Image 1 (cartoon, rainbow, N blue to C red):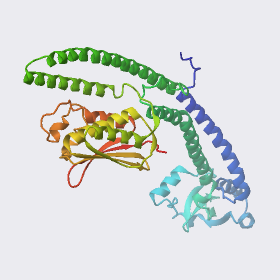
Image 2: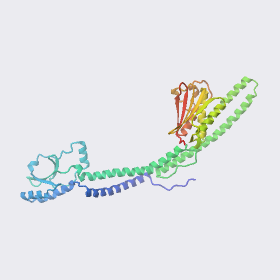
Image 3: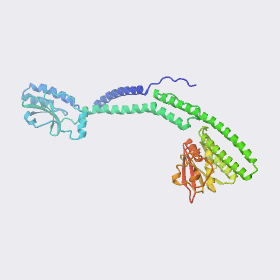
Image 4: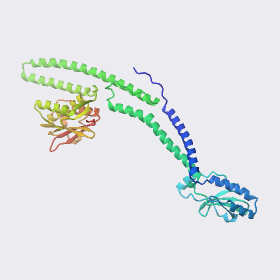
Length: 441
């Protein structure tokens, strides 16, 4: 019985908290960066220049021409370059044309000058540089020359600092949040789904995390329970079908063996054997994923040598080539069934069969090679589908079977997280390859 979990915050609530934390972090870091910048870097501030120009303008307005020249000389500093010009000399000057490219226009729009100039003051381009033109009277204008470029002023660097801090802070916080609140729980669910077939073990996904993740885990747990119930029902049906079909087949076999007509007895016995083989093949196919066999560490080479010996004992030319010992985690019963099915097909269509085992960096590779007619390239994808007659594809004529042998092999390979491949064998024949990404030791 599962205990109820305490309620967890939703993703929307957590995102709101992340954004609030990001705002606080940006403001705090911005203040710190401004203090460090003012302490260690010399950056021009056009707003301060505009304020100083306003102050100088107020002083010069009521001064005489001689006093104006003296005050302008005394007000000049390396970053403040005032000059007195006749208003007529500035009549031909228009607004600054420094934003000639799209990038410059975008920067000027993104980082506009927001300082305040005295009445009549404007920005102009003077000798290729930005300047402030402030009229003192009808014939004299105060010109503040050689203003710094946009990218070297606080009007640009201060907003840029906050923009970058905002972007970086949001990326870092949302990355951390996504890893913990979204990617982490989803990775655990995916790992659990990859680790098991989803129904074999009586386990539940951990229902922790945000409300959305908890809902997903509960939905998957409910789906797993429904699938488990369906599988259990199918297993009960398989047992019933196996008993109900084999019992009358056994009675028919006993009655057929009492027939005096040898030809009729042989024909009926062959038909009964065919029906029994079809029932067995169908039940094996339905039983592949129903048993939910767990992974075990086994000696795969010993498993394959046992299968080879079983075929050799009944007269088939089946050989094994590979290491004498190779321990790996796999589903031994399912893997033995897959290799046995492949060997059954191989001895049916060929005279000599070899089982190859090799170790790969990604896991194991098992090759079943025969000297039969092979499978046409356009049929190789179809033979893995249920009820496709492999016998017809390999040109062997009428054979018993529902075409489920290779489907069982494909299902077992997928249960291991592997795949089935088909390759031509020189000079003739077929190689069916099982690539299983298990961790060999």
